[in-house]
Structures are given as structure tokens and as C-alpha cells.
Image 1 (cartoon, rainbow, N blue to C red):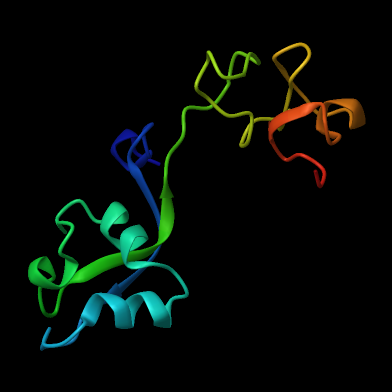
Image 2 (image 1 turned 30 degrees about the horizontal axis):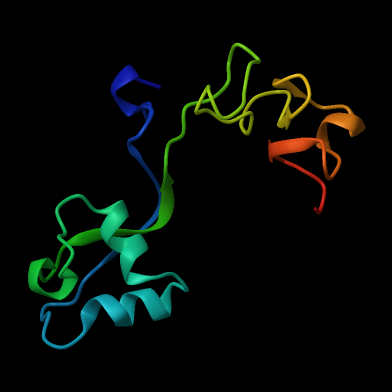
Length: 123
């Protein structure tokens, strides 16, 4: 894998793209959102070339991301919480313990009431 293909923090991590038809007449953005079970707002966020008025900026025969997310800052150092502005998800310890502000994978780290964010058990 080349370094240029690595998704960096706050960049779009696109999981699925689709190509618009040869015409962009009508409410193309809402149609895409409905077809791919997402929202127009999500499509706009995943495609920096689109502006808030999605239909005015979408182009025909063009590839757009319809499934994905903005790459978060991972807690690679194992420290998490509101002052760190990162996530334990994607690390080997996927639950942020709200008592220690450390990423963990034990049941007590992921249990409701203890888990601040990540792969928490149902709250």
C-alpha cells in the first residue's frame, strides 16, 4: 500500500461510490440518498466538491461517495476522553473507560455507565 492511499485524520474514508447519470435534472441528491439509505447532508459531507445546495452542484456522469465516514483521530496512545477528542474504535482496545480515560477491552471498560465511547455495550 502506498502512503498516498492511506486515509488521514479528518479525510473522507469512502466505502462505496456511485456514478450519476448523464442528466442531473430533478432532485438527484434526494434520489441518491434514498437509494443508498443515507441523507443528502451525509452525501454533501462525503463529497467536498458538493456545496450545501447539492442539486445545484452535482454533475452528470461523475463519481460520488455515498457510503463512508470522516476518518477520526484514533487513540493510538491508549488515552481517550472529551479532552483528547479522539476514539478508541479501530484500536485493539475499543472502549473508552470514563473512570480512567484509557482505552480498554475488558467488560468493565465497555459496560453501560462506564464506557464513554467506542464499542460500548448497550446503554
